[in-house]
Figure (cartoon, rainbow, N blue to C red):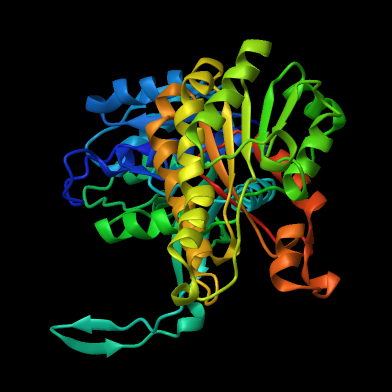
Length: 455
C-alpha cells in the first residue's frame, strides 16, 4: 500500500507574531518547511508527498519544490481556515486506499526512525500517533486552584506524524462534520472521539522532534540543527560512490598528511581529478589570498570546473592565551579562520557554476571552549557559524556547505600537541576521511556531522 506524507503547511503565523508564516522562516540555511520536506523526500518509507498550504502561499511552496527538485512531491493543495480543513483537503484528494501520514510543517527534526516506526505500525493498526513521555508533573487547574494531579506515568506529549488508513480517517471526519459541536486540534483526536472502537497505536517520539510555536523555539531549533548528529550511517555501494565522483574535480587544502591525505587517497579510487595543496607539498599558504587564488585558478584552467572543495588545513598551538605572542595568535587566526574566508571567497564563482560543495572541519571543542587552546577552539566555533550562514547565503546558487566535527583524531598535528594517547580513545584519520566522503554524498547543506569513536 502506498505511503503518502501529508505536510500540513497552512498556518499564517498570526500567533507567532512574524511578518511571514513561521514555516517560511529560515533556520540552518533553509526555510523550516524545506527541512521538513527534505526528511520525507529522503525517507525510504515514503512513496509520495502532498503539501497542503494556505492559498496565499501556494506560489511559495511551488517555488521551493521547483528550486529543490523534489521528486516525491506530487500534489500541492489549498488548505482552509482550520487545521482540520487542511487534513480534509488531503483526504478528499485521494480516492484509492493508502496510508496518509500527516505531519506538521513546523516539525523539521522528525527522524527517519519515527517515520519508519509509524509506517510499520500502519501494517497492523488503522491509526497511529507519535508521542513522548511527559517529564513534568501535569496539574489540572480550575479558578487558580489545583483540582487534580494525574498520574504522570500515563501521560504523554503528542507529536506528529500521525498515520491513518485513508478510509478510516475519512470515516471519522464524515461523522465529526455532522456534529454541530465539532472541534478538532489533531486528527487522532477525531478518530478517538468519533470512532472510539478504533485502536490508536502510539509510536515513541523524540524530544528533539519539537514544534516551532514561539520565537524562543526558533533559537532552540537553530541550536538543535547545529549540534545534531547528521546521519552518516547510510551504506553506499561502490557503484554509488563511483557515480557520485566520476569525472568530478576535487580540490583539497591540507592534503599532505592526516585527514586531508586520507581523503585524497580514498577519492583517487573514484576520480582522476583530485588536486591537493598544502605548505609542505605545494608551498600553498592558505592564509595568503594570492596563494589560494593561484591554486584554484590553476585547477580551473586545467580542468574547466571545480566540483568539491575540502579544507582540512589547520594549525593548533596548545598554550594559554596570555603566554602567546601577537604573531602566534595571528598565525592561528589566519590559518584556521581567515584562510577559510580566503578560500570560500575565491571558490564562490567556480562552485556557483558547478553547483558544487564545500566541506570544512571544526573541532569537538567548538561547543565549549577548552583551556590551553582557546584561540584554536574559538576559530573552530567560528567555522560552524560560517557554515550555517553560507548555507543560507548560497542556497539559491545551489552550493552546499557542511562541516565535519570529528572527536579526537590521531593526526600528526594532535600527536605533536598532546603526545601519545591510548589508541582506543582516538579516531583514525582514515575513518574520518571515509565519513567525510559520506557527508559529500548526503545531499544536505548547513549541517554539522559528528564523527565519534566507535561509530
